[in-house]
Image 1 (tube, one colour):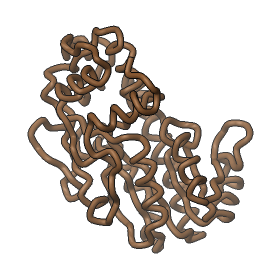
Image 2 (cartoon, helix red, strand yellow; image 1 turned 60 degrees about the horizontal axis):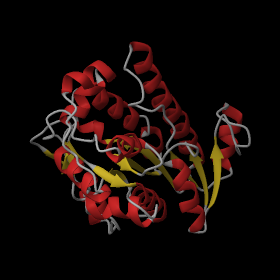
Image 3 (cartoon, helix red, strand yellow; image 1 turned 135 degrees about the vertical axis):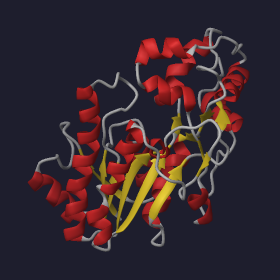
Image 4 (cartoon, one colour; image 1 turned 30 degrees about the horizontal axis):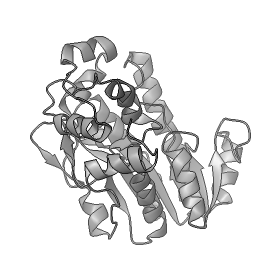
Length: 295
């Protein structure tokens, strides 16, 4: 299958591209960077959709790397919603085999007590509104009969990027610990499992609708810190208070300090099997088996 991929140079996309290629697919990339197969101009993007069989859309500015100023919030919205609407309209006209679009578990809002799955109602904070509008932007494709999947991605674990890459330097020198109260839930997923889920959704012609891109066993922040410390053979006793988070990242701290417990019910019901369902096994696969040493 010929697959049009956006966000191919990002944290997830850079792993997803070789995953799809190793499965025998031909991946064509949309990017503003030199060397891409297509760019974001109307003519180029239309040609990309016309010449491929499926669309996987991952592009969007990083949510957590900067403070949420009004300008930053607008960029987070436009980088997701505008591009998704454009691709959905082209998909509606061309009718590829499928349109698989990233979303995020921020759709559910935050809670220390609730358990969420794909049937849960939407939250009411900024991230929930952002994710809701992001998912709604796919409607032109689904209403035209294109098989459309939306993947609500959780906390992706890999030492090359994301939350784990930021935690590792602190934990490796023995200064790691939980954020805020430590009671908040972390709905994590091994990067390889997430890429395999995207591949599964592209290849499974019965899959449509929303799928949570999270491992089946979320953990609390306390458990994440303890487990990471154990895998690295380092202490994990120094918490980061919420007020320090707020001083560092502003409004984003509210999300990090509360979290959400999300279960991938629909992915499992569809027959997807996680290779790394438990946190400790996932961390050992990433930090011991892959890197050769936990230290």
